Image 1 (cartoon, helix red, strand yellow):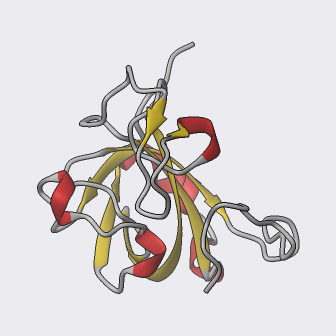
Image 2 (cartoon, one colour; image 1 turned 180 degrees about the horizontal axis):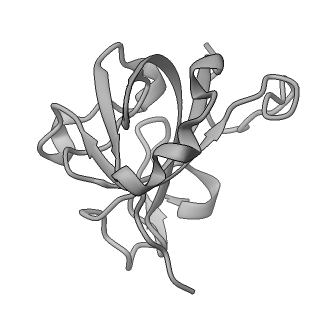
Length: 142
């Protein structure tokens, strides 16, 4: 398997403690800069309101299988939560697409650290990607 970044993420978050708990909880504008060869892949992206951003958590730990969440005292398995430390540090955020300037996308809802490798972008569809009945039993309801 070979992953090739399609760009880089520019954010104000320099260290892990700077990033929000979840990207979707932040109003901060973040820039996704695609490498020039991927410009044709942005055709019609301006007709999309939200995107799925996949990036590599290059400063996350890869040897962690259980983590402490802020919601409960007992540790949870990384596959049962959204912790950044995990065997394959692939991160996912659903972001609001604000503007497009050439190969630069300005978005809200991304919690990536500055300089994180951008792996992929996909259009978000509320008909396909939204699962209203989904839940995590141990996660407190709002």
